[in-house]
Amino acid sequence: MDAGFGAVEIHAAHGYLLHEFLSPLTNHRTDGYGGDRTARMRLTLEVARAVRAAVGERMPVLTRISATDWIEGGWTVEDSVVLAGELAAAGVDLVDASSGGAAARASIPVGPGYQVPLAARIRREAGVLTGAVGLIVEPEQAEQIVAGGEADLVLLGRELLRDPYWPRRAAAKLGAHPGWPDQYARAF
Image: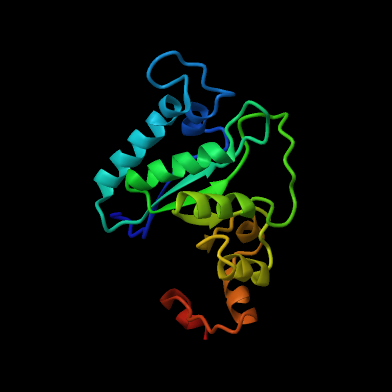
């Protein structure tokens, strides 16, 4: 917050610590943080409540989850719908729906927008704001996801690594006229 960031995101996906607690593939605990889904969600919800308390009510809090492990016996989108509702009750403003990361043998149907249906289902069934990710590379594709109500925003990762000016090109292609940051004013 002191550095001027406008939001904070809790990373509970891709096989990292919080995802390891959520997924039955990796959580074999027998205490209050393992076993059934409610217990496996406990740490992630405690972190969400602690982050909300630390940043206050005005700072947006997002949580990235792996909405499915893509493997039988793993975390499912049904689990994610429940988690998303609990995250919202804990003060999270938006669920960033990614997937995978708990099992190397997962069969992931990678293709353009392959994770968008996960965000759409969580949005629809949990009634929470969602972010869509996953091979979203064209401006029209991103616009349609939001305009069609599949997600409330689109988050880009690898595409911005390939082209850091993607947002500017996308805005121009879609007819918007974005301004330039003050730091770029000397270039004109």
